[in-house]
Length: 423
Image (cartoon, rainbow, N blue to C red; front, side, top):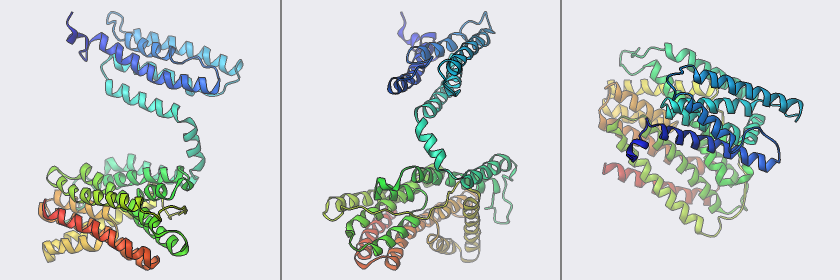
């Protein structure tokens, strides 16, 4: 028997194995909940894999093209009976299990048709929705109507307005492409929203470092200022605790920057990511150093003032800042040459590193600046946005924290500058 034929992506055996595995994966989680809660359910570790395999098998009989629809009808009848029994006999209210079972049947159909990626994505979605039921309910409890409404507005503008935005430059310098600008705003907002979601969901009492990390996913500047103020107000808290938290915020900002460059930058500019990578490694080493030293123990809570980046107003603010920097780069290039671009990157780095990096990439793609100038501008923005945190701490915090923070941030910035000289 030819083994390679059995493991071929189009073989019946391979499809049945994938269907069985996906069904077992969700069925296991279902069975875990049943055992833990001591409840009853019509689907579990054995039934769900059979339903997924039924969906796959129904696509393997070409002589009966309507077999998937017939099997689907049978599954619907089965689910209707189960729902009736659950509501009127077991007093169980809810359709989550029934709909999850129906979708898992369709997962089997997708597997049978060779659509493995779709099947896996659907399985992951079902796993998240059913496996994190309590966490999702808690998240919904913490979300305010204003945040949900803002997210709805942004979603409408993204889904309805985005497709109709011009995809060609609308300015004389060829850098303002409305479609690209709004798409990048959504991208940055999505990254920030992940941090905002985690920061709001995970209680700040879980630890200062966790709060620093989660808050910095949204705004490292907001976290830095909050830490600086807390250090000044609570002089009895050890200095090293705040230094470690500040390093966490800087490291998180660098991770965001690396992700942005790797995902957005063209191939010839991805090498610039080595600058924040080197700075991140340095920050982590400093974290380990200060983490091992005595005097970092203790607890303190911070509540940085964070706006949800997935609401309309913060997104528009970022978009306007992005456009302003784009125009500033274009004017700087026109009247001051490459030096104008670098001066703009220097000044805008004080405000927002994401907008500056994106504006440099957008201008480069529009052939407004060379690869070298774009790399220099991005590096300057990263360094300035990192070093400016020294000023915030000096202004808002106590002297011992400010001095040590200056040393650590200077080391990180120096490593970044040296790294750029070698790329």
